[in-house]
Length: 462
Image (cartoon, rainbow, N blue to C red; front, side, top):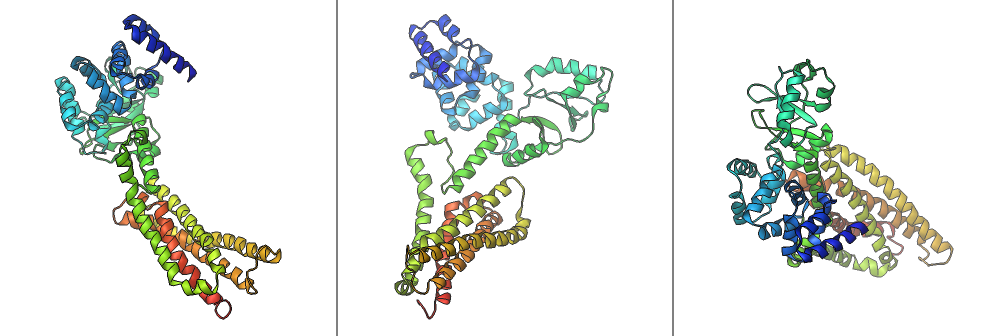
């Protein structure tokens, strides 16, 4: 990190001199990702454009792909049309598609016109697939061979056409109609005898994605397949592209970020936090906060309903935060576990009964643990003289014990079932956020607590 900082100072100095040869020499030992990390730190658009112009074409393309979208857009505005066209022509199809997706439609159309006819046709094809579909991620650059070829013929074909391929780890076998019939790892070609037929290397088992599949589904397929790339086919099984693991990692990170944000009690951000406008950030957070605030108002209403019980046994009010927080925490735990299991495809809607049985016993066990601690705490405080819970302290302790058992069990059951309800009605389970579950259990927990207290303490404190 310190080396990059020193390098930045050197680059800024030579940029002020406007010496192309010195600028090129100052960045000659940097990798594209390092150059991309330095460009946003340069203050003026003119200096950023000058630095970018001196890069060799291949390095410039890689550097551009590493840049954040905001800096990509600024560079395209600072560079000449010919320079932008060279970059866009050289970009990987999936990266170029993602770049176009995030631009205003008018700007995207203007940049599309800078492409050659063949590249424009590919870009338009990828942009024509539904948003968040595998078709938007795939690249049409891959290597395919025929089953009747020898290994020698296949390797000659790969040497001739493989230089533009997105990945050479996997080689795809298609029939005369272009239908995918197998995928083979490159290492098998390298280790096989040159006279061996491709059919002898095939096992006729492969995993493929459809262009119309959702990107979220593709993440789970990649996880199960454990391959560096997967082929993409059309409705008829014809091979039309490939998706590589690096693109899927980006999607997985994006999906995880959205789920975390939703689970935290806010709408998912379209842009990174540091790039999100202030008013947009407030809008994303205010909605859920208002809903949760209104929900918490019901907690006050529930306590008002038991005002008589509180007035007669003030000691009960001391344990309200303890009771409702335990229920909310247990509910949030259960919701987190179930939502993550759903995201990983470990459970589906039909598993709800198995989950509820498991959570009932989990909630009962956790409730007994917390209830026992609560009972012990009241006993110790009473015996050691730290606090006087009245002559009926054993009944107060029993009330806390039973309330914690009931509320923790209710929290785990409700927290685990709300995601199933959300999924069943077509909503994202992540929207059943931890604050939402906690608010629900808070309101119902008050009712459970004082109802148990009214039964246990009847004739004594109440």
